[in-house]
Image 1: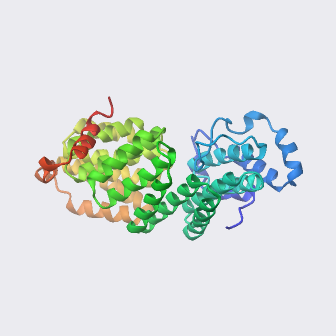
Image 2 (image 1 turned 90 degrees about the vertical axis):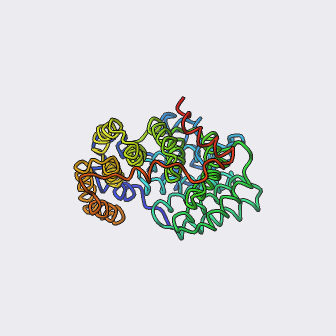
Image 3 (image 1 turned 60 degrees about the vertical axis):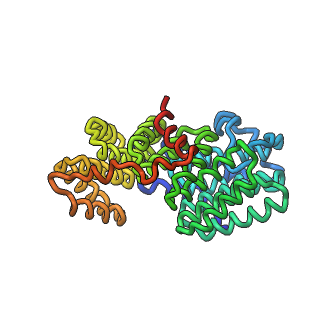
Length: 401
């Protein structure tokens, strides 16, 4: 496990692209303060830590009712003050991750792991899972894999199956990144086997199995696992992502109305610009298949406002989605304009896959584009769908109500 950066270096690393913070509701300076405090506590001798913690204003750390992910939420909160402090530092680190401050998050969670190490085995293993997740997001996949595997082995040996299950979902996420579908299926299935019913771990396991089904174009399995993950989720952000995934697969299977309804519901649930733009890119493509001009215009208007923030990849995705939607609906002029915008942005930031897609679309664009026959047809064998699949598709039409 690599050593964390000292707080000031972590801060400078995270905010080196200072323009992305313009207009952002949470400036990074507050994260630096919390990172510095966690680092300071962890550097103290154990006997001095508690005294230092008691000097901190209670409102400096996140609400103590919030608990971090990757823990056994069925177990009671530890009465140990070091375990409780470590959890609150980890909650703050998860907020840092959402703001893409991964180095400060890594430094903070490393401190939390040191603070809790002697007092709560499950909490220490959960913090190690958390470190692995941050490393994965930083692209240090080999180090993340080693940490996850160590947690699986140790947590099972010590009798913490839920913590081991979360580590397995982390290994499943790495398998997704590497395109290793057999490993992805194995890890998430093992996590589900360790998961108590109706828990966050079951939701995470089902989410992984849903994504495996999406990758293999298995609509029935995706619907079963996806709706179960949706029902177990307590986050609108997670629900929006699940609906996006299910609607995308429904669209690929030519269930266009169901896909469009699911995407519109996902847009209403999306709480962040990043998620909204990604969903809107798909929604624009599907709206074009139904020639839903008002929806395309609405997606353009709202997206222009959100894309003003520093999210170049999602911005380019959204532009390409609009270009595809207008092309499919037969409005070549609008399609050409958005495709050129997407291409310029993708080239500027060296998004190679998006660059290729935009160039390919520009080659195909004509004044009139009409592929309605191939888009609107029903899925082959629709009359032979299993009842569970019919129910899952029908629910996309009614989830907003």
